[in-house]
Length: 393
Length: 228
Ligand SMILES: Nc1ncnc2c1ncn2[C@@H]1O[C@H](COP(=O)(O)OP(=O)(O)O)[C@@H](O)[C@H]1O
Ligand SMILES: [Mg+2]
Image (cartoon, rainbow over all chains, first blue to last red):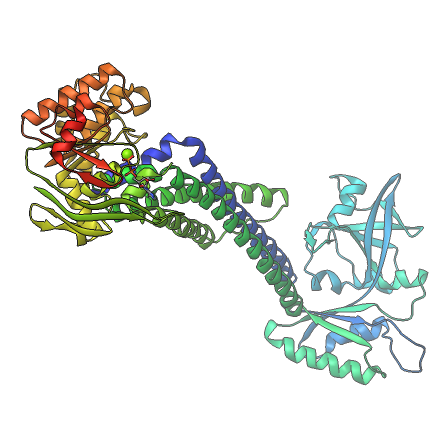
């Protein structure tokens, strides 16, 4: 049979039986769209998390003091001066002791929940915050135990709207503090909003809260290449300073990154599984439609054979029908899947990550499914003796 | 020339059926043979074997001296396409194709270029009085028109043998007379025809009448008297 005739014979029933054709198209479309949307969503989410961790800088080290489990004579605490001295260790550029507290900052009747970082001027450099208004903390603020505070972008927005709050007074833990600066927005890190913060001098904080030890120390290595040197130095220094075991935990940015990548990888596998299932379900829907279509048309197959069609001609016709449906369905599925991905990533405020290989593979998979699921019923029907096919009711 | 020698056909089903029993039949070129017989006597089975739509369980079949009983499916398909035209009781048009496209179908499987086969199809449709129905679908045609389309399709491939299985079985009197008239004309032009029919008037048009009775082909003299 000529190729143009083959195409015409395959196309005609698809066009004539529009309902049946649309149903099989829909099955494939849903499968492919689901695969693309799920994978794109997953990749966008993990790229965005990875990007935010990267933003912290690949030379960040966080030392967290473990809570005291039982009373002992062991030395387990660090004063903030000792913590600050970690900054002089080889390979370390900066060290910022941090005490945390979750509290509420208020101005007049407006209130804003915030994470309070009681620290030294080094913290904003370690965490690479930028300024929107005013200034950072200074050594003088710490030395003189001044009641000053730096607000995060969201905290400032909630209390003062879009105006410059520098010089205004806010209430924090029942004490008035003067706003000296506002940080530029940084976005969420996991679910922690890095812009709902209040940063104040650790000395001032300790005048109110009589805590003996710092909660953690944020360190910045001079250079990503010096990270291992820095880690070794910190470990040696702390184990000399502190007696007793298991007093602190050290986490580097790359460890956090690896951890989140492992979680993201696991989620991707789960989602790819879900996606594969939905594509197979779409394929089975199509197989169903094709089986009905072929059994309805066994007589037609008999007629064609009586007119001189070979088995191959019949096989090719039904195969081409299946490929046309699955390719068109796949193409529409790619379009719909990309559309859903664009909308979802926009709604979730993620930067969309779509690797071109994803739609290509999804499309190829739908065509392969079309061939596999189209070939089976066609092969079965084409094997009938023409006399048997003609008698079929 | 078609020649069946000691052809038998068994059907394996819930019960084994002997549909044809040691049938010997020779159809000369240009002959018009009518096959009569009761329902279930094996007439369609005989036509399927003559038309290469089914294989005999035993016995030999020669077309123009070629032993076709053992040919491959693909070779038989080609032979069907070139030498045999079918007309069935239930028309058997492809519902998704127009009258013209149905008539072109055997030529499509012969790889004939579109322009040539269109000419051939239109020639036969005009000859059978369907010049105003060429682009209609089967569902838009009457029974008599559908059967004329089917006949045009059988003839467009210019077959050596026309095989018709109760072609007037589903038609009214007027359409039956039309089809009979066309068959007479074709025979007059030398077309070889094997016609299966219940209709004694139609059978009487043939050169020769054979009768099937429970799969056995009756002697022709007896058959002739039977038909009259
Ligand atoms: N595919 C088949 N399987 C089993 N039995 C069949 C089949 N086709 C025909 N038969 C049986 O063979 C006999 C002859 O059938 P058929 O040739 O169709 O007769 P006719 O055309 O004369 O009515 C009948 O008894 C019929 O039931
Ligand atoms: Mg019959």
